[in-house]
Length: 625
Image (cartoon, one colour):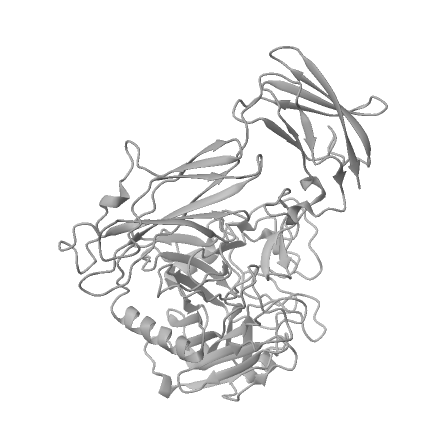
């Protein structure tokens, strides 16, 4: 790897971008970097980016980071098969300190401290267009130029790279001159989904002595402005585990579904490869100390202090763990591992850790769930017909086999059944189980019988609904390995009538449109937010922001093709809409004019003309803001 980084410095490619105004909290060159954020959408998933932390940049906006390549948001909480609800992993960030004469320290989290003007992100990717977060499927070999022989060993693998010398950070006192390759690994199977694994490869470009590596965790559980004020922090000094508990009370400790978050959150640092825990020094403390003074940060990290934090008096639930020390030279690679976990108790966390250690030692062997079938939908008037029988050319998942199962060749049909789900929120849930369908007449499951079609009735027309289907297997009859469920295959469906044959019954909904109604909070939502991601303090998720142009009224019972013209009472044309879809009998409008301006309160007229018959209907509606 180190030979590549010599090449990287010589061939660094700079993007030429138009000048951009960046908030003062960031170095002026921030817009030049190809920042990337992805999220593991299985298991104990969380954000992964290429600035060494597990969250979005502070004060994230598209203007600040025009090159940020947002992936799907993924899930922020993971739910166990026994109904436990977990609140996500919290924020983790990489800390590295060393000496080149005097102490040098580089950190990933961005808080400004001690009067600093600039957020303290010191790890940044290079300005090469490939220096993003790569996704490598299980068993595939990655094509990252800095790690071309990486093979994905988990169900989901992310790979990224950053260093502490690519950004000219105004307040960075010294540079380690170090590159870091970070890989993260997630599994979505029951029994394997409550952990997330990070591997760090530290590659110095200049000699360093007395190097310490560590992780800072801000793991507050709950939501609202007082998150973390009642959290209890603790360490298991022997097994090198940090815990965050959330006692009942103080903050809003409940998920969006009204389920109380289970705890604790936990993390563990494994000693770097080639070292044992006992031959190294460890620091475990709760001090925040995220200032920009390298000597202070290094001294705290390398102190060897170990103390039980108790309740964090600052209410932010921050704890550290660090290990050292090491002497590194160019050409060396120091690899260490972080595992983050969630559980219903400390014993549950320890059991998960033991299971993971055995799993890793055996080479991560996993039987696979059957693949999910493709789900198809036929929208109707106040109903949706769902079908999942295979059509010509598609795999019949009921005939699936898995050679990794120990009962392979013994059990003729390891497939057992389907689970069908529905949501009115998003294609990622939360989900309501519509039905379980399994093979009848055997010793497994409920013996309900297999179905391959479902009709969902009583729906609201012209509203988005979300459906998902998963397949599940029989337990392994030799090993006793539990039944496995596939990832969901999800679709979005909008029930409603087909386009009408002529005008005459067109109506506007809602009428009147009231500006004081939060239509985006309806269930199902009437208006969908489309802005950049921001933190929702209710459910502690990063979600799209509702914008003015997300307002929505709908013309229903619309023929196709047709044209609708909207006027003020004085006859001025506000907006012209066209409809040309035989499968849809409605047309949306976001209450903006032909030139993109938002409209004012008032009474508006419309004409709707069928371009097949030439007939015209006149109507009106009211907007109150």
